[in-house]
Length: 595
Image (tube, rainbow, N blue to C red; front, side, top):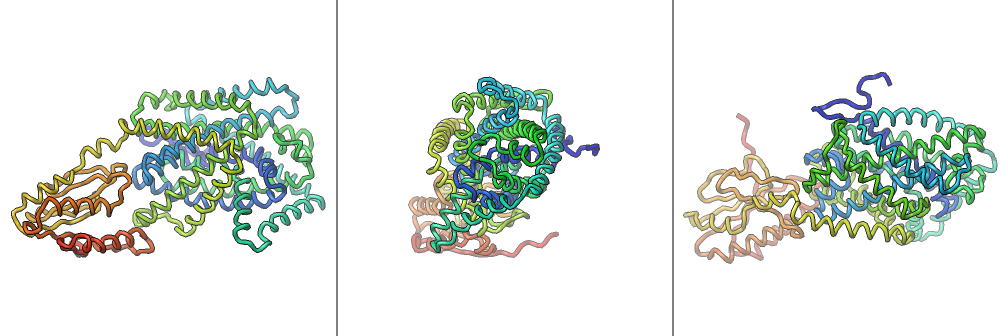
């Protein structure tokens, strides 16, 4: 605690967080799940939740490696923060990015509100307060966290770390108490839970087993909500290596603590039906005495309040990225403490509104929360699959198995479908908010999208036609090159060079008169853009006037590493049949020796 800069430090005039600080922010969010997720899982699948919560923990650690990979990809593309929104925008475009915004924003709003509700319910368990007083206390929690964020991230990190130290001490005692409280009755309950779990896979029907697996994971995934916060707050850390360290920290803390406490609580013999909102304080009183139960209730309130803090920090980063991209700079004006105070106040109003709409019901909030959480996970893994199969691993150093990512995507997508069917109320809210965000976002993007000026800088097909007609030589060579590739052109009198670029990623730079850069059109593939260009050339320039040679680079990457290259080359090989009047070349030129 005395070490300098162990939580925050100044870098280029801005306060940044260390991997430990970001890990603790997210831990306080994930840790709060132990106060409501075990009962929510039990409510849907019974005692086999004991096993499924542990299994889901493994799945989430598997997912966190993909989050690290996404973190490096964003950094390579000069994108800082924004998490699933920034990544989906990079890979899938504006429409899917607005879907991601809606899903993740629903997550943060509901993280804050469900944590607020649970904080008051757990903290006042032994005080016997009326429901009216509890309801108004929930607004006090939101106000306190709003003020904490407005005073700055440095002070926020210090306060959160102190809570982490207190939580570590209390939960360690709770785990010891829970393990010492295990008796023959507890072991019998655990055995029953395992038997129920085993029965999901013992009937020999693979499809039914997979369905049961998805139901189990879908019922327990709320226990690990908040994992995306590390990636979401990437603009507050130095580089992606800190993201990796933070996720390792979470794997060895909440990745182990959550399944253990859930196992002890659900097997304790407590009448679970009577303790929906105060299961963990009641269990703590059982194993370590009444006063320890009061301490755990206080800890529950504090950690749940800090989860509201994490949600506010992460959602502020998300809204900041959206505001930067679409030029709403008035919204991201910071105060002297570098706090986005306008966004924090906006968040506080959103949280309060949801509290009023749901009347502070934990069950209703949990139902809404699950849909947005799994939707954001699915968008992340789907975007990663598309990116890796189109870009390969050449530009990144940390990369995971594509087959594993594909398996993870199918599991998460299946889980999303199950949750949407099983929890229609949450699905309806998610659908309403998502529809509103997409419609509003697309309208804003028409006039404020950052790729608009990049599209205006593009060359047109007619620019290429005019250049071809200006060339005096009958033999003309057209070279297709990747955007921003270095040393790709030469000022030859009978050659032109063409690159297709994505306005979301690349900025065109006109270097030579025979180099043309054309912006990709949404919903059109690269091969469709090339075919459209060749059709125009074929129509505008008679074949007896020019002998046109088309040159494509030799694909050096393996087909397994870049599956899309195999598909693209296959499509290029079909072009000669479609355009028999052109000459096609796929070639490789040796690299020039360094002088």
